[in-house]
Image (tube, rainbow over all chains, first blue to last red; front, side, top):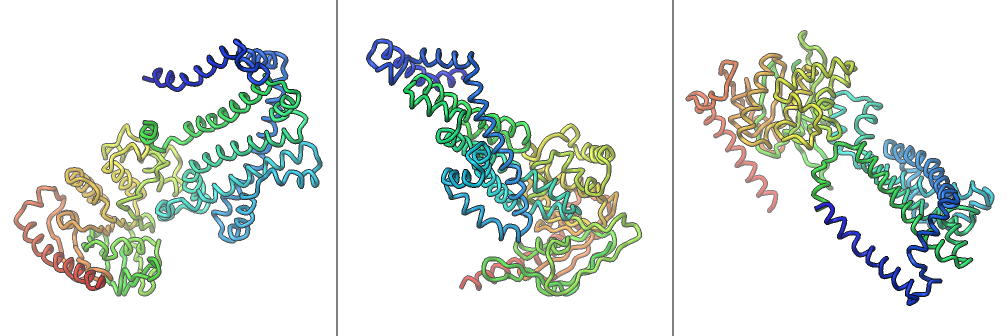
Length: 258
Length: 262
């Protein structure tokens, strides 16, 4: 059954690749616009063996993770504090919400003005994205904690710290994981956009140079790598969540898949 | 510990208007007594227990706690029908939560919890999470968590109401066994007359909202009690008296509700 499903999922992409390969080789498709999949693969492999691919992926990943760390951790703390203390929420939430609806790409020129055109301004832009997503979602998570559970813990004499550690944090964790996936997805989009516009390296930069020099095979390699990176971030966090949060009904997950 | 409630009034905001859940309610428990409050649904029983547990504050009246020398602590713990367990803790951590909050070291609290869990038929299930447990098992864990702390007063808010008949009988018996050993003051809320008589020393019948006491019955059957008691002549006689009183106030409640709708 499992293999049958895998087969169904792969059949259409494989069929497209085969048709593409045949048409490209036969000269029906312009090899300049649509290089044969085997050629794209060859380019990809040569970029890999020359170390260029890893260098570019590394640059993108470094920016992404730096931004996620610098923005995400304070974002989480800010969200939890906003959830726990009403005055903090009243003061900060309007600003964070307003920033949430601002396209972060629009902030880049301004950030470059303050922090220079180098790496710092890029990481700050990515960090802002992660900060906002984490802050708003962890705030929601804390506010969404069932008051009955809070009352239960209080009845058993839980103090402030115990309440945070044993009730608020575990109850918020699923939402926080969703926020991390969302933040990383958005941050990847932003990272690649920034690299296209103003970075000396990274996948975005590779893509843009490939476009300008009309190296279509490199262009396709770039797209595939970017897509893979996104998928890996997503499923990596999902895997981590599955191993950290054991209490959410597995039965439910199975039902959803059907 | 004894609880003395005098002239208690509690209301809570529901939507725009504030509903009065209890008005001028006075009663008191005796030391080591199993007291049951019997009332139609919506008569403010849950509100009363949450107030006694300290989660709600009365608008008027007072609750006095009179400690007894046999009390190990001053805890007044509530066992609820729903949301009784933390979904993110396994059976062991849920059961040992009260001990954890009291600073009992992990090994000691897990040993004590396991002992009681095993006695309640949950041995070998201590690593399961609440979503993997049946309703009956969940309520057993909640009861275990409460008894492990050995509180001065135990408040129970229809803990067995959602269970099927068979499971309820088993859990009632288990509760009786546990309680007859510790003899702590219990205030038990239910709308099941059989359950009330089987478990308690004294029954107070509450009126519809806002609740106040309209009748009191003593239940003097010998302990330890067993489920077979519910089929004896004396039991049925008492049940008839209580049920009549209970039906009366349930009718009142319905009439009142109708009047409000008009």
